[in-house]
Image (cartoon, rainbow, N blue to C red; front, side, top):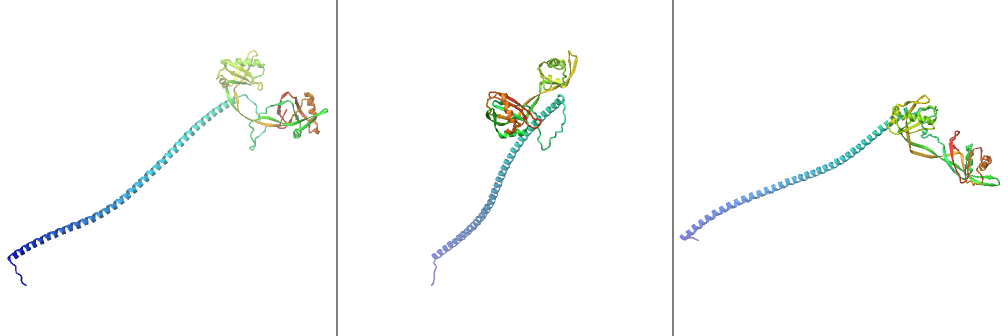
Length: 384
């Protein structure tokens, strides 16, 4: 087969070649652009990967920092809580310390008060010692009595006379023997023969009130003095007049006398002054020379503080007379003397459980009597 190219065909061919050349150039340009785009794309992918890695790294670092932040926040919260707890503890300790300080202040005040009381007691004891040194002299002697360790100390050893009221229709009888009184009380009911008739009476124990303990608060009188060691060469009234005259004069350290009286049991004299301070001046001197004009005699008298006493506490107990028996339920059928005789005769007979009668008293109905009990020297009991 043969081809033939004409002039026109050549032109077309030449144009095609030109176009083909242009297309190849464009294709190369496009390929170059494509390669550039691929390079940019690859670069972008790489940048993306780098960004992802960076993001992951940042996320990891962020997580670590968040964990650290949470840990720091937790530690900070723990520190705050611990600090708050410490503050609470310190506040409680401060409160405890304040309480201790308050208690210490109270204790200090109590100690000061106790010291003041001790000083006051010391002053009173010193004053009491001073008073004791100028009190009227008494003779004391040891009688051989000793209180053992297991024995109770006697707190109140006064032995007064006990006065006890007996109502009417009763009799009080004291036997010489304790056993007889006990037997009469044990029998209780007694039949007394009076002529052709008889009466029934009852025997009861005598229960007597007595002082067991007594607490007396004493203080030195600011107005009174006690005058002792007074010689007995003047009648009482004349002596009191002389003493009042002497101690009323200022030159004798005296003053206006309110009253003066003699204590009958001791023979001492108590002078009461109107003003305070006079008694202290007189007792500080102690002994005073007193001239009794008219009889030309001088005596040295002792002037002591006068002690006032006030009972603050008293404990009353009860004792039973071991020899005395109270007879009750007695009708008024005979006169006092005759009925006493019948009672004495009845209770002296051993057949009636009686014995030797030491004392007897009968109080008829409608009357009453005050009986006086004293200490029995033979044994510890009280008898009428």
